[in-house]
Length: 344
Image 1 (cartoon, rainbow, N blue to C red):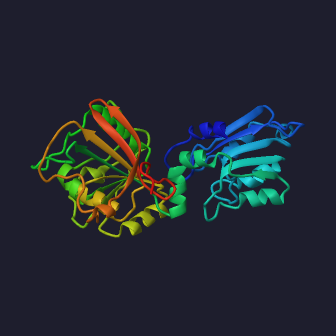
Image 2 (image 1 turned 45 degrees about the vertical axis):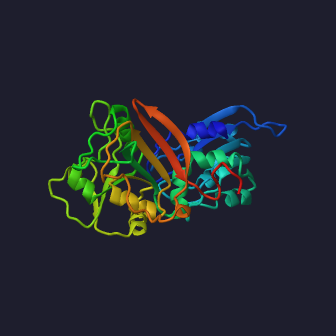
Image 3 (image 1 turned 30 degrees about the vertical axis):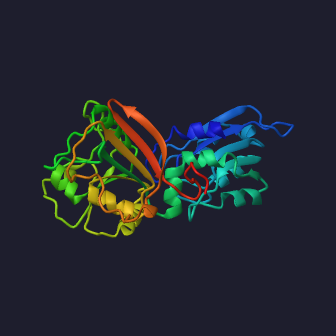
């Protein structure tokens, strides 16, 4: 299963489809796994799914009775391609082992279809590791909204802009380039109209030399203030989505219906605070620069916390140094991941 997870990482991090890996092992007389005979992964919408990709490398004689190890329950629906469950049955696969059940409203049910056809099915193998590897897509499918990553850059005293409103550049080159890499792995990038008016950002994903990266996130502008026709975001390689709605769950639901599974929220403080207050943030990326700014240019504003007991508790996943800056990656504390420290 860990090998299947490593295969899944070859697929694109963005898009409507999950990153899935599949490893197929020859049938063994004693019931154990034989030698690895094929492997595959999903390369994006419209391409063969991981199971079909792996099966395409085998003859009918090789696949008959073999074991397929796949990170996600084989799908059971017709989309751009046929059901993987039917492909596995037709190939004569004798055993299917998977980690996570498919939460899709239309694609689930593959395991039951395989069992009906006489295929041995085992589920829940290394489920925690696979859940982590697929957390963006799984969160989106289960909540029917995009996975939300909130990013901001601030001084050590929590300011994202100086008193005159200037904010370029708080962090250094390495940190800014990492942001572009994170943009490229996202389906959409969200900003408020205040950021568009103050900074006129292009919201593109660019490489070290300033070139456009192969994948560009869809720019989404949120706010009731009109933005000028000459704003750079309106000349993005992807057509911009501009909405005056304040209904963040509604906006995210619309983005999900458009095929967006990962939303990268970049600012400014009004939009960031609204997402936090609404409990809609799944991951925080906080870039801290070794500078002090003072003043009123806080990275966040009112997030609905008025007493210490209402604090939004986070679990820090990692801290990384990028040049002189720090990148702190954190997630909201949930019942599944309680904070460490004193016992309750």
